[in-house]
Length: 365
Image (tube, rainbow, N blue to C red; front, side, top):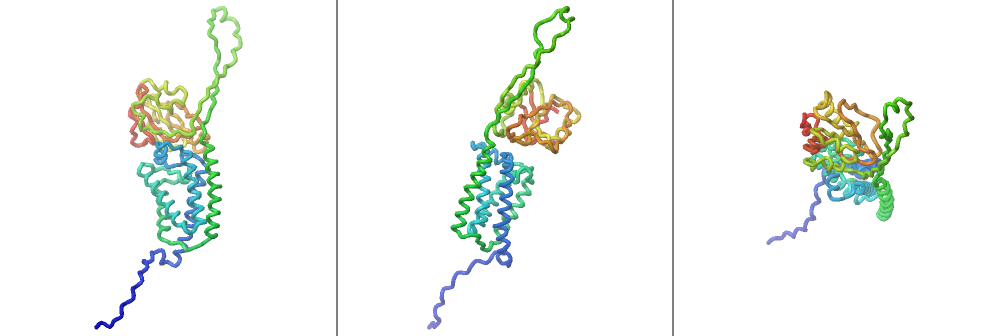
């Protein structure tokens, strides 16, 4: 006869603590990461972006994807900045959602950076404005922060009650979003520029020898003519379908007065470059420093919508190249140098971010 009493059911065992939870200071580390470090990191990027207010700060491949869907890049930029401000507010004032929001933001950052590296962007991601480090370094920082947030569970710290926190966050979201959209969207309108040209009226009446011997009359005053041009708020360059087209059919070329007509004869190069771009200088020095094999036109691209940079200018080593400029007042979204090889005005090769060591489009060399 079995005299043993039935055993009481055992309560399910709690999962083993994670390594970060076993450390005495793990909760404090998690708190500092989730409520201070990550919010400051996200806030820094948002402030850089809203200060410069340029779609060029967005990751390059991401730019092309959203623009192909028909979204205005200024609206996209304003929306992303507003989302970053919202994430910061939630991490600071809503403790229950702080860790989740930190994970979501860092995962999103890592995925975007991985996509940029996949697309071949190794120069800048725009995460911290024009001073952004290369994408691989930003990816390393974001990944380490993500691992810290996942490993260390933050200890509770309530700045306000739940109801007061949500009320405060709601008010601040409306304020920051209104300011963000107001500031960024103020840059999205087209720009109209007026070009004033002076022409000397030399007259067309022939003169005989007797009249030529007489003292000449004063030259007539110069006649001023004005031309107006409306520039878009931004122009995103996509040279993938330019090969086989005549430069007259590329609307970007039409913003430079008379350029298309001068490119119709024979073999030529057309190179868009920046005066502060070291890759551009290296390409020109290596392949055009001792002369150009065919007529070559260099077109300087303004570094920003407000104009050309005046600091950090690099020497232009091509002495026999014709130099022109894209007009100021538009965000020209391209990665220089952009090299076009032309024959009788037809694009035979087009390459953005041309490599100086092994160039693809210097086919007339």
